[in-house]
Image 1: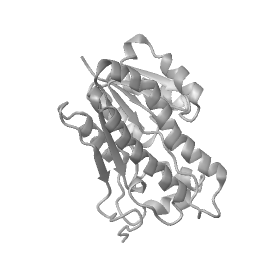
Image 2: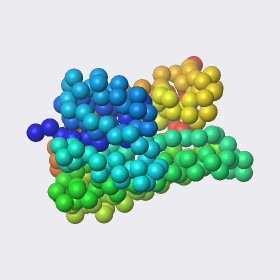
Image 3: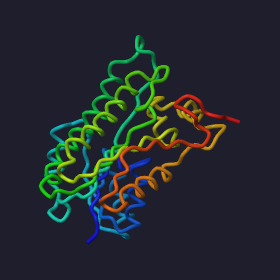
Image 4: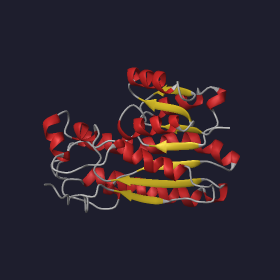
Length: 250
């Protein structure tokens, strides 16, 4: 019997790459995202490899999260793996110049969205005394850098919640893991710089950044260890990156 994985933020970047790799390894998929057209295209592509269903919702909308997850077909209702991948960074400003709307967006998605999805899925895992939750953090979960303030705070919260989940769910035999990527070349910087694609590109020039497929490969490795093995916390950076802000660019 194949495993069933629930992936948030599945329409691009790490989420999409993880969905593609899972499908190749016969893991059944529940793909979640805001963009209906992308969800449909991904479902059409990956359904050739495994069973796929989709849910369109925004993780920051609590009612939509619970409504969507409760609507899952019976054959997809037992979720073995939850990948809390949806997240964002808005702006790169000092604390005194920060945009409150940007702050709300990061806290609502990175922290509250992760909590809403987890709250909707964990009860069935505790009933079965099995499951695996993978929380996608960031190198920003481990250090704070100039103008990173609220984004770093939101990812520090993910780090804390990952530890708390592992403690609270220990008695239910549920594995919990966090993967903290460094610089990954995805749409992430386009969002951070609010559509300024030229500025976003400079984040990845002069060195070889991680690709979404690199993190997907790590996620797949983590979730396919024997059940008595839990890789609880990983930081994954490109070779050129020594810290959140130190990158060897040639």
